[in-house]
Length: 320
Image (cartoon, rainbow, N blue to C red; front, side):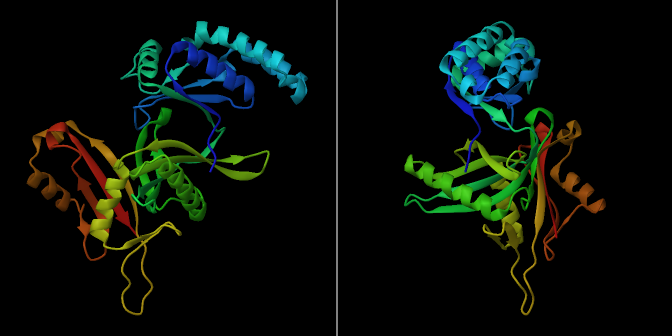
């Protein structure tokens, strides 16, 4: 499994400028770089910069295109390019960065303060993301690794996580399964056990004419999607086959086992929910035909992210 070009464990403003400048100069084909705050989740701590907006990048690009690879990679040329770019980033980075959640970090200064306080990451963004597969693992104390579930993540603008679909269809299940086992083994070697979520992106590599898979995020905990899958598994009473990526119901005698799919959204919000009692809400659902068929294992299931007083619900919809 591969990871994008990146810089980790950044804890100072000067480190951000220096490491970002070095990454851009070493990877002139990357057009967008993503900043991530280490302790955030769901895309809340993301920001990005498109290098085409930087004046010095256009000048460096002309130099890059006029030189051979050997000339461009010469230490003197690289150092001069990094210095030029770093100077502009120091002065103008705040003008070019797009912060994903301005409701949380109103200005880049606030974002950068949070970034450097807890640490952060800068990593390359593929030119065109074809999908965002994700997996939930369990690492036993003896090193045995189980892939509990896989899914495709759904994002809104600026990398905001909305929900997920199952089964995942972005990449061949075998490729994702192999990547998960490799990451699980690496984590166990670092003495990490228990529940882990791993996020990926997949994209088409034009020069090599092949589909690529990058691991881009690690959640060392039981994730929301793992909890949602457990709910789906509880009502479906079937089994997840990690090698095929499918979920199979128990087979009736003489018949092939049926598969089931689902889509989840963990944050449906409406202010009027706080005025309803549970029995009224579910009565309204039944009157509108919003139910779950226990025999067929299809339909809609609500799960309470919090009390109705918060006006928020989770929704899991199962189908054939």
